[in-house]
Amino acid sequence: MQYLDLKMDFMFKQLFGHPSRKSITMAFLNALLHRTGDERIVDVQFENTELTKETEDGKTGRLDVIVRTNLGERIHVEIQIIPQYGMPERLLYYWARLFSSSLSKGERYETLPPTIMIAILNYPLFPHETDRFHTVFHIREDEEQFLWSHHLEFHVLDLSQFMVKWKKYRRDVKQLPEWPWLTMLSAVDSRTKKVDEEMVRELEGVAMTEQEILEALEEWQSLSVDPENRYAYEMRLKWLLDQLSNIRGSREEGREEGLKEGLKEGLKRGLEQGRAEGLKEGMKQKEREMIRKMIEKGMSIAEIANMLDLTEEEVKGRVKNQ
Image 1 (spheres, rainbow, N blue to C red):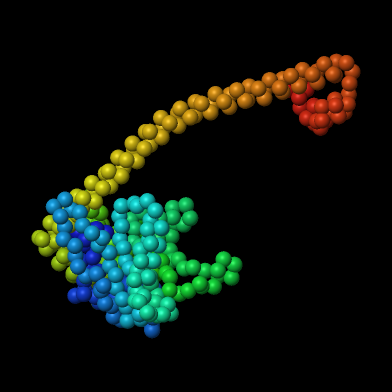
Image 2: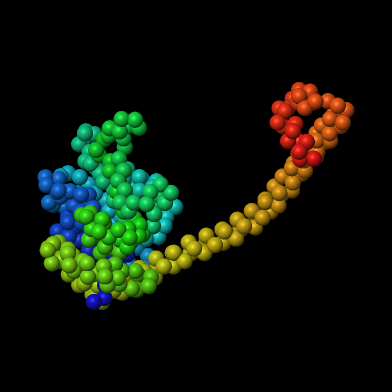
């Protein structure tokens, strides 16, 4: 069976952002947010159901998913496979816009709903800070760690790190409620057009006991074979790959320019450093010569140290290095 890549925002929104498939959306969100019992989401209303029509070159508007839950929350889900500069600030901006748009004129601030931003990325957002594939952020007091407000919550899911953990620590990963959904998102590589058959088999195994996973797999298959859907997918994929190629080209260009400038600056600094080091070494040599003459005149190490404001060990070191 051929599957299309759910990391492609077009496909992601088809499966997780359509009212006819809201049972899949709710199961997906409950798993990502680790919701159980009374905290489970049991109903959602979609706020941006339109699928922006693709242009001939594959460009389109943002294909994110925004829902309001039965618990009064607003949840914004964005999937991004191309690294973006300033992504933390961008996500914060999207959250702020969504949060502020919840308040109508004349309404009180306490009526604002909790707003959750979920970013699903195919690259690490904080590569130097963590190797976890699911990180959660709130605003907390620095020392006592109490919450400023439960109205702000960010989830960042790194699919590239999920793949690393999946290969190394699969047993541990499978203890987490989100693993089947992240497996579904990771199973296809749009650039190589390859499907990870082992991942699909794992999902089929889960589908035997979990109705939501079975439903998601069936819908995924159906969307993947639809001719109109496949055409829109291919156009979008072509555009995204062109964007990725442009980014890489710009980086390579920047690297070459940086190397040229770096060589010039390095040569300049090298000459300056060489002059400074030469001057420093010349002064040391002069000092060693002075110490030698003092010793020849019969002065003791202690007397020389006192006169030159050095320790006796430093004087001995200068003598030794002559």
